[in-house]
Image 1 (tube, one colour):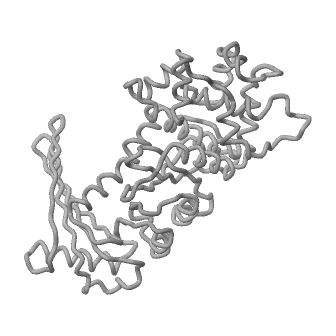
Image 2 (cartoon, rainbow, N blue to C red):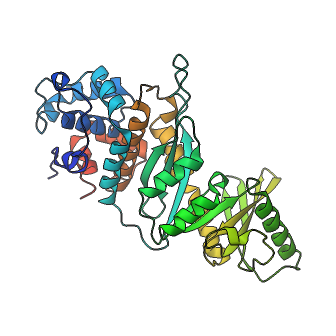
Image 3 (tube, rainbow, N blue to C red):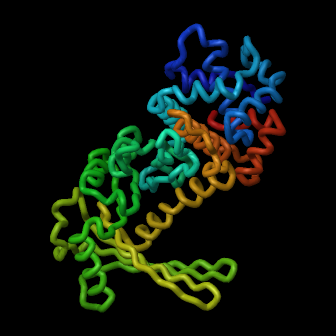
Length: 375
């Protein structure tokens, strides 16, 4: 028998400040949060959906919530979440996730950004918001997320997100936008390791690494390690070749990078309908690595795209969401990440995330399992 009560919400969100003044508190913040979390798990993709879910499930919700004034309106949900402090809300999310996961030594933690395409407001001159998220590849959970400031970029958001994460013993992977000396130094200071993609934003280092692997492939370079993988699916063939070397004497700026100990190269060849394309990518590493281990880290990085961003668009219709008011888009993004984590962590039903959302909406007992999947 699975019990549902507000105790889990209170445990993790109890320190969240209520942004309302007393005379407007017709509904408790716990009730509002609980209904919103349940609704987003159960396929609600906006505040009208959240209100409709609450109205449809009011009799059931009454068994464990106070609801002194019934179900809040969609306007109430929208106003409250627009004013909730997003930093506090994210910290509550992180506390809940830390009850679920235990990062293991060597776990790959990809960090990547995603734009919420319909969160713009032309009238107010508001651009679409951009969220940077961290993903635990072994645990398959979103660890945390942070909105990129309107007048900033991911380079400033990544350090702030890293600050609230426990990455000790983990390998942090970031695309070329995060390949900066200060970010590498912060990862090392937090006792993590890094695999950072390298492009023209670091021109001297990029040129030297390219020249190094050109020499290695020609048989004129230093000692290196090599591995390759093959994937075949629906007429598409992919071959990935990996090289690593820890002989870095030719890198002119190597001493400027904290704990830089190796560099890697990936050559990805894709054949579709007889047409083959190829691209090369370069990386810097803070630890000596075999080509096989390097390849695992690089492939794990793409999980955040395939298992988070793609799922949020397909199963949660994130890019279609038109929530725009104040902190509303950012806080609703956290609700989606929370729902995604809880649904993925519940394993008794083997369906897709979309199927699990439907099942939770149709079956209160299954929703109870999802909400209790952290226990």
